[in-house]
Length: 244
Image 1 (cartoon, one colour):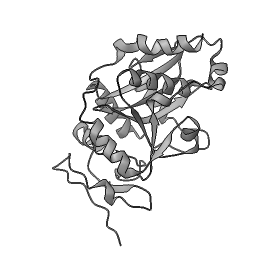
Image 2 (cartoon, rainbow, N blue to C red):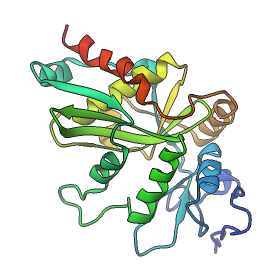
Image 3 (tube, rainbow, N blue to C red):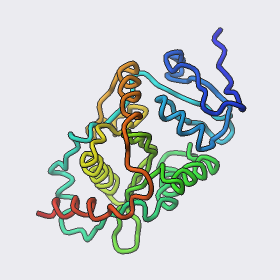
């Protein structure tokens, strides 16, 4: 019988070796601890992320394989261009992080709840205020119609969640994020757990060993710290390109 390790409250930066994660459920590595910035940043730098329901202890995961996007392969397909034709949408960075998290946390059709529990949402909002978490927002007038948010460590973007209130909203946010990160030489967006929707958007799977090796390299590189608001004109170019 495999015993799941309990994290040490006194050492927030210590995690078990992700290679010891369980096969069933895939990637479950440890439980307990907290959602402080030190622990969360250490987790992402080690290829680990929290994922749990409100009635559970905090659970930590590192699945095999890992779902990722290559930023240099994200392209607008014909379907997305048709969806966006004539729509007066605009894109911003870090203008509505809390609203983006709340929209991602809203239960989806067919779901009874959400894994983005209040404690989780507040933890990422704190990371955002410290300059470690960022959002891309898609607007129609003053209405938020799509977005994505995640955490950066070094030159790795760890995607947490995205949402659409209008068809194409999350796809546009992902595309804009990919183009921005490509400018800054961020090669990967970690999408965590594979599903058919992510694969349809262009995600691929990495064996965990390869993913962890890549993460170790990327977290040592200088990233783009602080607020990304001032870089909004860079993502606005994404919409301009699609309208040509």
